[in-house]
Amino acid sequence: MYVSKIEIVNWRNFTKVDVPLSETTYLIGPNASGKSNLLDIFRFLRDLVKPRGGGLQQSMESRGGLTKVRSLAARRNPRIELKVELRESLVDLSRDADWKYVLSIKTESGGRRRPIVDKEQVYKLGRRILNRPTSDDETDKERLTQTHLEQINMNSGFREVAEFFQEVLYLHLVPQLLKYGHQVLLPALESDPFGQKFLEEIAGTSKKVRDSRLRRIEEILKKVVPNFEQLKFVRDEKNGTPHLEMLYNHWRPNAGWQREDQFSDGTLRLIALIWTLLTTNKMILLEEPELSLHKRVIEQIPTLIYKARQSRKVAGGQILISTHSEVLLSNTGIVGSFLILKPGTGGESTEIINPSDHDIDAMRMGLSPADVLLPQTSTAVGDI
Picture 1 (spheres, rainbow, N blue to C red):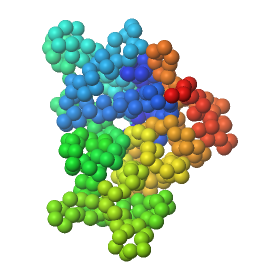
Picture 2 (spheres, rainbow, N blue to C red; picture 1 turned 90 degrees about the vertical axis):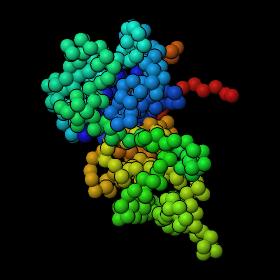
Picture 3 (tube, rainbow, N blue to C red; picture 1 turned 45 degrees about the vertical axis):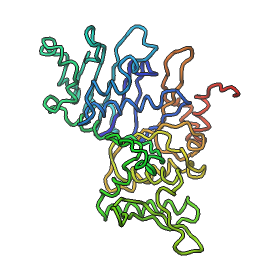
Picture 4 (cartoon, rainbow, N blue to C red; picture 1 turned 60 degrees about the vertical axis):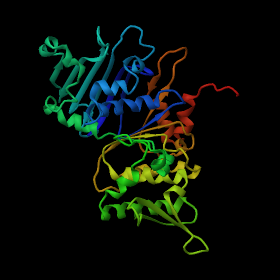
């Protein structure tokens, strides 16, 4: 399935947003414009339904509570509201969405001031199949501290929606955690967005599939990493710990091998990015994938994403990419759509706009998104 549209009311930077999403959508905006906050909406919905996510209460608490999540510009309406449309195909958007999920959250009027469900609705092909609060909710207000989406015994009629959100994948690999995670002893998050268990994930893949993916990664690395020759998976002979090893051209035959703790940050991030693109056909959230990478590699990220997705045996999947990289957006062959984030002034909310018809025509004529769209996000930055 795909998210075809999302509506937002009072979520962090945004007071009111209604935008479409495509199979690949680039979120373009300056620092602190709300790109991460927009991605976090899908992480929040995932956390709602994760077995160890803690549902509504823990998902809100981990973000600092409702008052931290609610937009500071929300002067009249104290509620947060999310509406997400899901479709099996993005070809015909004129018909009713396969699914529509609506969740409105407010603060408990008394007592512990917890976040509670103000409204929860589910539509299937335009027909409403869930409408809360119900009479049972009104009788027992404690029920409103949980969504039906997070409860297995209550979401059977729309479990497909819960499973979609549960499988959302956020990737923002931190190379140091992968290299030295065993030394800092930080517990990995269940969804492991920072790559602490990336090697364990590779190790848990069948040998045939793992070798196939590593060969495809190896082919790409040969084009962008100087003197690189070979990539392989190994286990430590003493304790069985999984490792990646790379062979570089070296005048001493056995001196060219390196393990992942010797890889550059950019190389590790590139390996993780390609592996993820080859692995899943679910929704992927990519935050600034250009970090630590060489300019020539960054220029090719859009092409890499497109080709990696096309090369998989299983079709489908959706990608949201946040970036403000002029180099990445200079690629004139980007396949996907764009959302432009324009932060307000004086504490006002961020506006999200679609490229105009004039913008689209300019890009069709050969100008890049960096030429056409980035200037619309520019903000004044003073000298330090």
